[in-house]
Image (cartoon, rainbow, N blue to C red; front, side):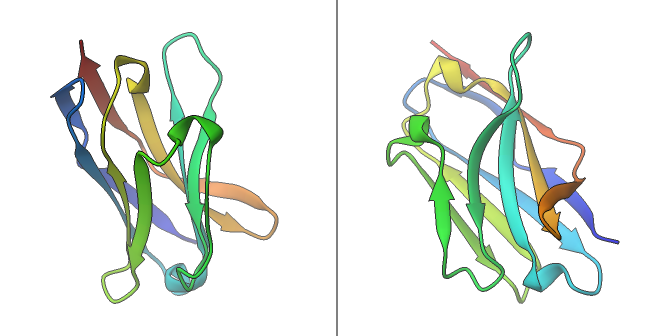
Length: 117
């Protein structure tokens, strides 16, 4: 069992930055692929980014276009999402999730990101 807690969301103006954190606990949390997803009101959940257990492999959703960077510190059991050049359309609840097996099936409670124009 892996428990995940997101933090770092908030209100920011367009063009600003935020860094989200996903703190994991559990015996194998340092070895799991962790992803970030987001869901805006009335929209489907959307993949944002993911990072392998070692941090050596990352991937991003097409809309990121170099604005976001995912990283991890396994000494702290924490995965980060640095978001720059934020746009109003980035407004959403952001969730982190751990992949156990083939699916992302251990989820945090989410953190709200609101970008004002």
